[in-house]
Image (cartoon, rainbow, N blue to C red; front, side, top):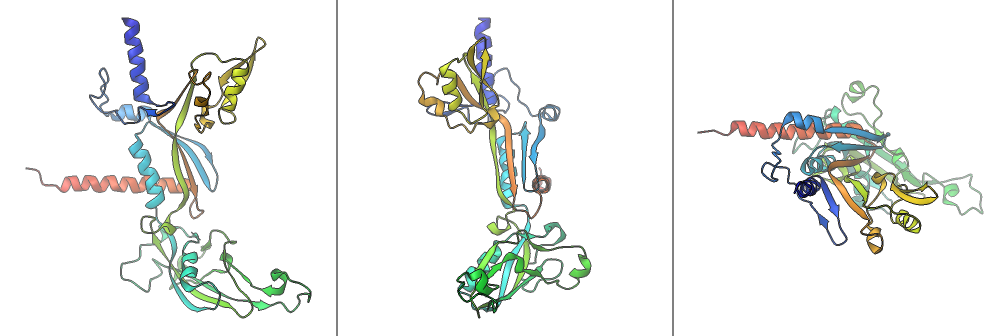
Length: 351
């Protein structure tokens, strides 16, 4: 009877803490950590218990990519961070394009669209949102860029040459040709600023002798919810931490076959007393292709699961802001949403 209770408790704990991947489906996917969901567990939210279980571990960070573990929170909160990163952290992007001359083969509308999608190296925290209906823009809410370039023949090109790079001057229009034109007193407000496209080598258009582009651009502050060009991330995603358990020892040829069923580095082969024995080296590296279920002799020897409250986040910035700053800003946005909700609750009259 005691053994039965222990087994039941173990099964219950698996249901609470793991998402189990089977051959034909995924089990225990729903959030159930609320009071009264399981006998023997209170599951009432407690700030002390939450602080003990919650932690953030940064596993990789460089100027463009941040990978970190978010442990001890619910899927709804993790997904809120992801959605805020995609759609609600503001950036600066080209909103209006004033075309003075465009004799290239790229139509004005296509040219404006291409310019809008070029990420601009400008800290949006330095600017305000432009007021609705304001067409002109001011130094506190607008950045102005100019693109003025004309293609001509290269008089020094060899007569027999057919290479456009030799024959023509300025025949490729790149993002580096966009120059910042200070509005109002911006030159004094930002004396050390270097507002420019994030990448210098984005090809905008190609020209031939006599063709030219002369446009003025207004960059404004906005969020990805309004237009994808304002999204500060190339990707923002998360996955649950893999949990791979070998139910019984796997040796010899079966161990070699098992290793090939998983991503490189997940399973390693050890030599124990002359026998090849498989062990789980690093489950985190697995992508869960579920290849194991194609092999009848192996599929019942392994249990595949994911840890329900352990999220591996990957945030790749477009280069406008470092990824760690983007995560900080996403937290700030979420805190603002929570505060507005509390203010709304306080404003509701109670009888």
